[in-house]
Image (tube, rainbow, N blue to C red; front, side, top):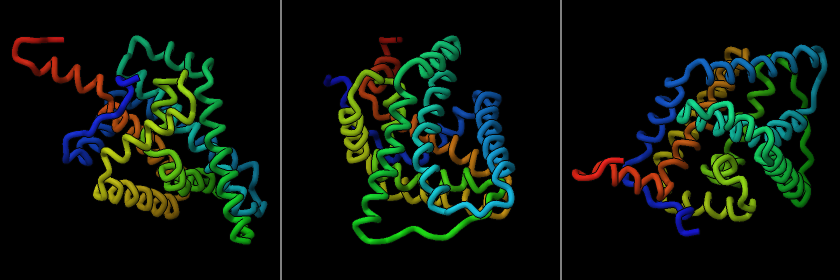
Length: 247
């Protein structure tokens, strides 16, 4: 199992990861754009069906927290397909047949349960209602990014795609170890600031596109961070860059 252990990435890596995620999305704008459009369509459809209703804010927040891991795991599967174009459909079909999507939903539901338990212990009852406007649902997803990062680390959801056979506890340990090895205040500051900016833009536009684009981009950042932390990838790069060796 040593080959699964994450490695410490050469610093500075924050801009490299953020730029790498954008470059990966630009390699296949149609696929990532289709996913962004799909998320925005789901958002506007939900808003249309809930039009005129006052929805409890906690319902939106917990729906976002429950479903965000599924979105990020799907983004990782799509990103893996972009890197191996001939394997795109097999990877997506494998994602549908495997337990990756089911385990990602379980991770989201577990997060909701933990948050609900903490609120109960603090005797805090969530209140307030929101109008179901276009962008409201995806904004609730984006608002939960901090919780998912805190609970699972940056690499957990790509690991679900690459290592579906490992236990959730083992995946969580690997993700958290990668986070400890490559902790960077500046990286998290930029990522958190990007999340806030996306929410502000979404608040102004209310179309769902900004939040959808941010969810896909942040999921791609997780994928790039996972690849950079893989020791086998570091070995391949070392072999590739050696003067007398090519792979």
